[in-house]
Amino acid sequence: MARREPERREVLRAWCAHRGRLLLHRAAAGARRLADLYELPQPSDLGLADAAVRAGPLLLRKRRSIAHLQMAESIHSLPPATGQQRGFARRTGLHWVPLARLDQITLSGPHRRWIEEILRLRAP
Image (tube, rainbow, N blue to C red; front, side, top):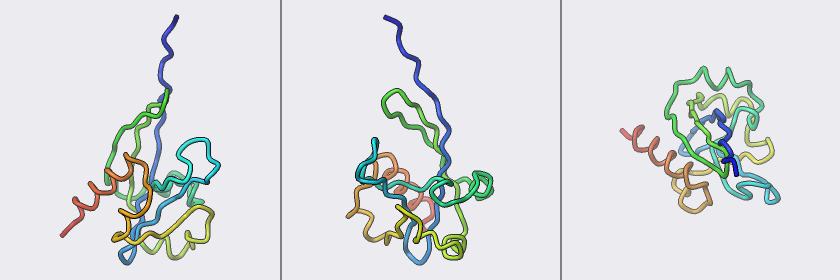
């Protein structure tokens, strides 16, 4: 039996923090993968073009696998004003989560580690 080659995918993520809160996307309860889990949003979640997110500074680049999918995820910082001006919180699935409450929500494992790493790197 031939072994199936993993599908490779590049995923772009946005880091948007403002006033002690982080903008996260929560997958729908009926989602096929990652149902009800929070992750950093993709440009499409924000209604932005990939180029708009890619223009921000690269904070972290990591890899993860889900089933036969290997993903390289790049996390870019968006200016805090971007989220406020565009009203991201009104978009479906987006939530401003206080940094102090991150341990109380269900983040995907890789995103929890990556968020903690970025917070450590950005700490004064």
